[in-house]
Structure formats: C-alpha cells, structure tokens
Amino acid sequence: MPATDPNAPLRVTIAGFGQAGRCHAGAWKAMDNVEIVGVYSLRPDHEAADIAALCGPDVPVFGDYRQMLDTVDSDFASICTLHDTHADYVIEAASRGLHLLIEKPICLTPEELFAVRKAVKDAGIRAFAGFQEFHYGQLETTIDAVKKGYLGDLHLAQIEYYNGIGVWTPQHWWAKTKAIGGSSMLFCGCHPLMMMMNVMEGRRIAEVTALDTHSSSHHFAALEYKATQVNLLRFEDGAIGQVTSCLDSLHPYYWRNTLVGSQGSLIDTRIHSRNMVAGLDTKGWSDLATRSINDAGDIKYDMFVPMFERILANLRTDAPMPYSDFDRAWEMHRILFACDEAARTGKPVSPDAYLPT
Ligand SMILES: NC(=O)c1ccc[n+]([C@@H]2O[C@H](COP(=O)([O-])OP(=O)(O)OC[C@H]3O[C@@H](n4cnc5c(N)ncnc54)[C@H](O)[C@@H]3O)[C@@H](O)[C@H]2O)c1
Picture 1: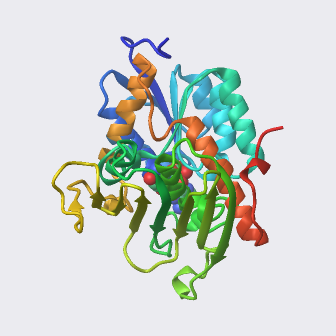
Picture 2: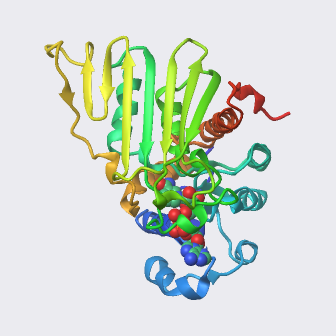
C-alpha cells in the first residue's frame, strides 16, 4: 500500500538550511504536488531571507526543531542539520509518524544507529538516506553496468574518494571536529562505501581491515581525525573491496571507480566488456558518455532531483527505491563502524560485531 495519498500534496519540513538544506529545498520545489510547510534553521535571523526566497515568503521559519514539528502539520522531514543532531532528530520525527530523508551520515555511533533503526521500524515510516549521487550520471551508469552483468562476476572493486577539507571549505569549522564531523569515513567516506554496497549488492562482508594517516600540509592541520583512511573488505565469497576516503588531498574533488570482473572491467568512465554488445575490440575500451561525478564536490539542487523523484514514487505508488534506501544505508553504517574500529585498533574486525542485540 502506498505510504502517502498520491493525490494529496506532500507536506515537507526541512531541518537545517546550509548547503544541503538549500539543495533539498530546491529539489522539493521542483517536485509536483509538494509543499514546503516549515523550515528549522540554526540561524533563523541570518537565513530567513534566503529561506523566503527559496521556499516561499509564507513558509514559517523556526529556531527550534521540536517547536516546528509541534506547530506545523507535515508528512515528511528532510534532515539536513549537523551530524551530532541526526539520530535525535530522526527519532523525534519518526515518533510523530513522519517519513524521512536523512542526510548522511545517519548518526555518529553504533548505539545511535540501532536506536534510529528501531525508531524507524517501530513507527512503520519510510526512510531514505541522502546519497543523491547514485541516482544520475556516472555512478548510476556504473551501478547499472554491474547489474546488467556487463562485467560478469566482480572479484575486485576499488572505490576511491578524494576531497580536500581545508580552511577554504565552508563546513570546515564543524567538519574538522570529532564531535560533529566524526571521522574521515563518517564525514565523506560513507559515500564511496555506499557505492561499494551498490556495486556489490547482495554479497556479505566477512571482515574489514583499515589503515589511516594524514597529510603534513598546514592546510589540514586543524582536522581532529586522520583524514585519509584506506579500508580493505573481504567478502564471504572471496571477492575483495577497497574503499579509500582521502579528505586531505590538494587536487580537485575526484572520485575513482575500478571494477574488475569475469566479463570485463570498468575504470571511471571507460568500460571493457566481453558480453555487452557484439563486435567490440577485445583489446579496447569503450567510453561511457555520462555526466561526470567529479563536479559533485560542490552540490547543486539539480543533482538531488532524480533521487527526490524516486522518493516520491516510492511514497505514492510503492515504486522500488534503489541505491539509497534506509536498509542499505543502515548496512553501510554497520560496515563503516567496523572500518573505523579496524583503523583505530589495527586489527581485522567482523562487521557482525555491529548487530543490534
Ligand atoms: N549528500 C551530499 O552530497 C551532502 C553534501 C553536503 C552536506 N551533506 C550533509 O548535509 C548535512 C548538512 O551539511 P551542510 O553542508 O548543509 O552544512 P552547512 O555547514 O552548510 O550548514 C549546516 C547548518 O549549519 C548552520 N551554519 C552554517 N554556518 C554556520 C556558522 N558559521 N555558525 C553557526 N551555524 C552555521 C547552517 O545554518 C545550517 O543549518 C550534513 O549531514 C552533511 O554531511 C550532504
């Protein structure tokens, strides 16, 4: 049964109006039959004019999250606040029956992860995670190439994510902290790890190991965690995964995929496949003409539109939600916490250590 009435407007609240909150607002405004009914801002005085311009002059702005939930009737909440509030805000909204889009990461600790999952399941609401990058362009093409079998059975998947969280980054003031940013994996490494979950869909991870390090450049000296972490994943079927989260690189934002399987390989936007179409040169590469992921270091609302369309279709017509559904994100966080423990202890960790009791 659809979660919401397909003919009634979906009433949406947005919590947090920074870079992500603005993208959510722009994407919701682009949807049919959706009304933004309230915005919670950490700095209402500072952001009221922008909220009015983007969401509409009559949309009420709140300086208190719970007050917003108590005051306006809504069906859905977009959680775009800082990481240390996510779990609490999700639980609060779920307990009121709101469906949710939660910006990554869902939470900062395994305990919060279990609590959030319980709240979502107990409330029977639908939840989605903010990984818009899998719903268009290069990454969607890559996942689809794997699903269609063009690479055969993958035995090696390397997903590498490079960013530079220096003082020039607007989020630097909070992203640099362990208390809010969390770790290299929690702040950004969750993106390539979620990509790994998508290309290796259906396979279980037996064990992870990880190493971390940091740049000696003064640009990254304020980061409270080691910004570079390389994680090795051993799958139960013998396949190997490698996820790199490097947040102290000086080069422009760069995302690199290397997938190797029994029928071919895909590296970034080049594919070599033995079963895709007849007549291809067995010594050559074919180029995939698709929007590059490498402009996603600076997010814009149009990048969120395809994911929002799928969220609405899921709520209104029960259409499947690929790539960024809550259960997949929950599983990814379990692996993430195992990776962070492996980096901290230098020992292999089984993700099954992170199962709710
Ligand atoms: N899905 C994605 O690609 C993507 C991209 C960016 C951020 N995010 C996620 O979205 C969430 C919010 O991140 P963001 O980039 O929007 O953060 P942001 O720093 O742009 O804004 C977050 C909040 O902090 C407040 N804020 C900003 N500067 C402030 C200051 N100087 N003093 C006090 N408050 C200030 C803003 O009002 C806003 O409510 C996080 O979970 C983040 O990881 C996701």
